[in-house]
Amino acid sequence: MADILVVGSANADLVVEVDTRPGAGETVLGSDLRTLSGGKGANQAVAAAKLGASVSLLAAVGADAHGRFLLSELDSAGVNIAAVRESDRPTGVALITVTEDGENSIVVAPGANSALSVADVDAQAAEIGAAKVLLGSAEVPARVLEHAVDLAVSAGVRPVLNLAPATALSGPTLAALDPLVVNEHEAAWLLSRHTGADLSADPEELAKGLGRLGVRSLVITLGARGALIAEGGRCREIPAPPVRAVDTTGAGDAFCGALAVRLAAGATLADAAAYAVRVAAISVTRPGAQSSYPRAEELS
Ligand code: RIB
Image (cartoon, rainbow, N blue to C red; front, side, top):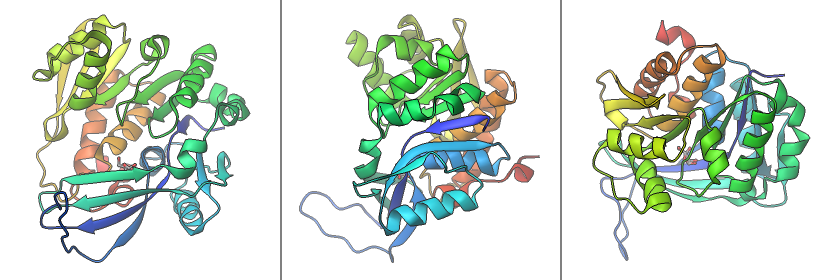
């Protein structure tokens, strides 16, 4: 049984470096194609495993070459893949462009990730109940996340969810999260959906607004600026070390994996977030997602 049970996506990341992104109707030439192991769930699981945690991944891949590649990469990184099931849908694929400033744009074809089901969650009820932290992300169906959070809460397991991409979840699920992790855009989307308010300018205002929705604790990731945490009605900024970014792909997933590692070890949210911003900062200095994640020794 693992300390961290991750429920989420696994994608083959097809990455091309470009000088500029194509606009509508435009074609641009880029670098040679690289195929990397990705997907927000798999990335979070690998980030946590590389930091020394025991981690299981609940996910779905297709019976194809991408699926076999992802399973092999997860296994090599030390993630328990017993709960990654084979689907008759194709393995998820992410089409990623990266520009010289390290920024990325991503289109995901979810494929097998969409086939992950409530029954798959039920089949892992014992694993969920034995974990210290359940960690989720939103490239799998919302009902799957909601059910996994319900099982975790019933078993006294801490539910942590990165609502990326922004997705509608039930009020009780949002309220149970400890913490909900979002970036500024996702936070603004969530608030606007629930209250109609447009508070996109100020992270502290966003945090206060989400607090009024009953969210138990919250992390708003702020990219190069670090993160803002909110719990018990109080906000605190956690600054990130300055770095030169070459590829920000999967930095949010690195943050969440690291956050879960420290929370599973009993750290406070502030201490866990301080560790997570350091891990995410290292990740952006190297290309790719999983390939960019540091091992625990690099953090000492
Ligand atoms: O967060 C980065 C990830 O988003 C990539 O690995 C890609 O697969 C998409 O899921």
